[in-house]
Amino acid sequence: MAAKLKLENVYKNFGTLQVCKGVNFEVNESELICLIGASGSGKSTILRCINLLEPIDDGRILLDGIDISEPALDPMPIRQKIGIVFQSFNLFPHMTAVENIMLAPKRVYKKSVAELEPQINELLQRFGLEDRASYYPDQLSGGQQQRVAIVRALAMEPEIMLFDEITSALDPELVNEVLDVIRTLKEQKMTMILATHEMGFAREVANQICFLDQGEVLENGTPAEIFDNPRHERTRLFLKNVL
Amino acid sequence: MSAEKSSTYHKNGTPLPAGVPQISRRQIYENRAKRRSIITASLSTVFVILLLSFLIPLTPGWEEVKKSFFDWNILVKVFPALLEAFLVDIMIFAWSSVAIAILGLVIAICRNASSPAFYPLRLFGTIYTDVFRGVPVILAIYLIGFGIPGLGLDRPWNNPYIWGSLALILSYSAYVAEVYRAGIESIHKSQKAAALSLGLSQMDTMRYVILPQAIRRVVPAMMNNFISLQKDVALLSFIGPVELLRQAGVYKSLLANFTPYVGAAIIFLSVTIPATRFADHLIQKQNKQRSQ
Image (tube, rainbow over all chains, first blue to last red; front, side, top):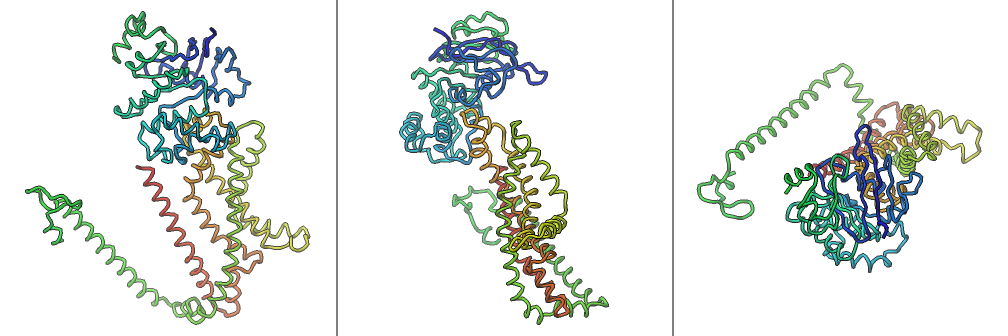
């Protein structure tokens, strides 16, 4: 089976700073892959590149075998297939939760509120937000805001979801309610890429772990392989420091 | 203060534990400092007013000035007509401000257009703001207000109301466009990233995500522009419309007395001072929200 998403030798520089130095990995349909590594190892940048928020300098990103990193491509239809959730939620503060969620499907798919309502209500209910629909972001807790952000991305019915350290800005007691969302999505066979510092969670849910070090995938494998038998000294050192 | 001393309860109704002083040393100190600053401010204000009202009448020209600027009878006589002329200012202000709010936004969006196809728009926006911010408003009024009717247009197109308003609109739109632009640039780029990542187009991102936040943020700054527009409507008196300032000038010549000008000033102030206070209030409210 061909990979759902494949990164081939991806390079990304910010000025003279090399952030990605030939990143390779692939994700299969319905697979959950966790990117781990120290801050600055390039996890967030890779996710932003996959979503085409940042253009890559060299290499290819293939979605269903099609090169989406082609510079001449219109990014809009591709972004609709790839949802992303950010560390800092980035909800639109002037809209209620449900307006945040409905904006893109309304504008991009030209659907009416009446058409969207059953689907959105179902999503809100599934993630315990049904009584928060008409609240503004600043009236919600961090965990609720992040769940709204996830539902907002899901409302576009993406084929892949990217999560960029989505629990790093949350109070510890709120982390689990957001991680539960990912557990639910895994049950529903969503293809997902997580950049995360939650090692216990990565071990529990991931099919594959990628350890990134200074812009390269140093090693990847199953959680057991990476956590129990790391091959590289650097991986061992990193895990020793975070576990 | 004796009431506070005898109270054994907190403001929220819970009894104070024994041994805690009912009013803290700090509170006593702050109350005293506050009282002292109020007394000092009142005394110094009264002193300055007394001094001025004593000194000014001592100047050699005071009697003359009093007669020609502060004649109560004349003020009462001309005030109703001045108020009526002020309606013209309000009218010009009303249509100009709507046009300025719209044109300013269009110019700001032009200057913000990033696609190379829109380069002419960006160039136009930049030149426009440079030119109209660089020319004194009164000069724009003269050039447009006298220049365009000079082309020999027929009625109603030779009307100074139209061209005077246009001069105000063009000048003020340049300033207002800069305020909008500052607002657009103040919205964090993560908002744009979030909108684009959902698959929204650049235009929808601007319209539904960036602009609503930007405009809300610049409303107080915008109000200051409109307050000065309210005053600058009087500049149109130089090219013809009989608005408040012009009407006061007519009475000045008629009565050989400057009191009508003082009347005009009173009318302008009665609008601009409340408006300024309101804008300050909005700015303060916003600062408070942002620092939370």
